[in-house]
Image (cartoon, rainbow, N blue to C red; front, side, top):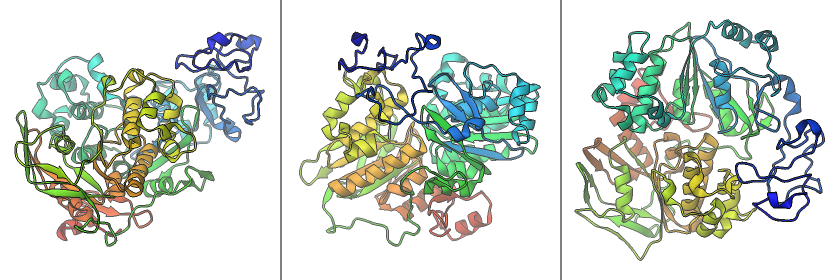
Length: 598
């Protein structure tokens, strides 16, 4: 027994055989079998995950999760012994957009790589290299048989818009125009660029593009390919509401009867607008993922929100997600009804060439005010003014007494964190956040899977992991006022819903107040009591209205964008109307862009 190799915890606890340290700084138990000598694995034939083993590691160095053995015949791919395993695949359909929804780490990217022909499935055996005949036989009699026959014969060409658009400038050089011209195979790149507003940055080097501009350029490049299947992995990230709907309209317009379209998306309103059918991927992140049967898009999203898959008899979460189905009972703070936390007079602030003017307003205890507007319109600037990080040139921000403020900025960098582990940083924010069983630990830290990163140095986390840590720090702190700038960035749907719930619970139980800048309409609808709408000319001038009711605020904002929403009869969630549809035309005629009915 080599105890010294277990550096994270020198516990002198007898592990299975030896406890070396893996790349994440956590110990991995090894069962000494000759054929597995030197490999960091657990002997699965002996371990049934009963949680009764006397040699279990007391510090969560090893996680035991039982796999769904009844689905073994549906195993598609496994990366290695004790590594992630994927069961089933989404089913592409010609002339339709197939949507995919699920938690990060449950196999969405693996599934689309297999369907794109970028990865050959091993049918669940990491040591095997099955030929195409074996793979086709696995799908015999299913809708995927013909697809894999074409894939094996190299008769399917894929155009794949990747998830992490910020990586593109590392590998591609040139201007927007040059790269789109080079990618074009259908002679449509100029039309696509104009429709997405890229003609204004035609000569700009891609190293100087924002995340949203990179996203639109990649979508245009993908659509300009002459491919058989078009795959879009999170096409709405980095985009504001207007740009998300614009991009979704363009993708829908390009759908053709003889082509496949596949979309992975966390914004449910965009997924609803884009998709004809939807697959739900469930499982244990990083351990296994199971692709559900296809559902109609409305039914599938409602089933996902309800948290129960009837066809699979699977419970995704304990409680369903319920939206308000009408505005009559919405809470709007009124003077004298609650304690006023913060107020501001008419404000004016200038940052470089940009100027923001804001009307007077106030926020009350127990209230959440959402802030909406296009990118570059001054939402982050307003948050910083209210947080006292930017002083306005005109007007004042005042409170009744000294307020403690917890601020989560839009952009996160390693330098924001001290040189300490995730656990130590969370302990400093609130000791309760690292105590198993506490509601902060259960509903925030564990839901964001930060408990598995406790021993990691914060500055060495990935961008997504740092975003989650920043959110957890901001929400763990005891504060009177929470200022949250795009809290859903990098989060999957389940994590977004968890964050929305805890923001609501914090304001209610602590009597605190919160400002939330967010582009996800569904999330704003779920948590906001009132809205601040900011309109104007992005990058040059912004005008922030006084806080108004959710109904009036959304109506003003969506009218400016020319988009109408309806409410789903079953779940109450907001749904985007197809442009020119009967409901779209009727609501515009009635000046009801955020309709309260179904």
